[in-house]
Image (cartoon, rainbow, N blue to C red; front, side, top):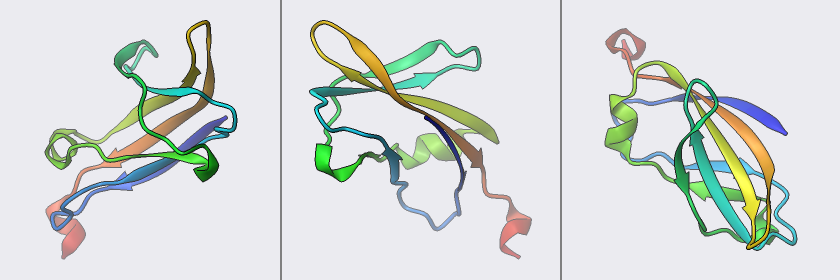
Length: 105
């Protein structure tokens, strides 16, 4: 499963919350990967909290980090993992657009 969505940010925004939809039934552990432009893992967050019945993983990146990012696409991957194996639950592309002064005029 691959999904893409726009993620604009306005100056008055105090936080950002996202939900990555995934089939979580029977999953023991979820890891969230941030991928670089070549598709390699740049950051791996292991054992992130989730509720299987929710059908997704909620995350809230730091607002100052998001403000510092230029227009770009952030690639994320959710993995179901256990002691013996892992498999991809979903790939996601967040199309970030920083705020521009003329956007609010």
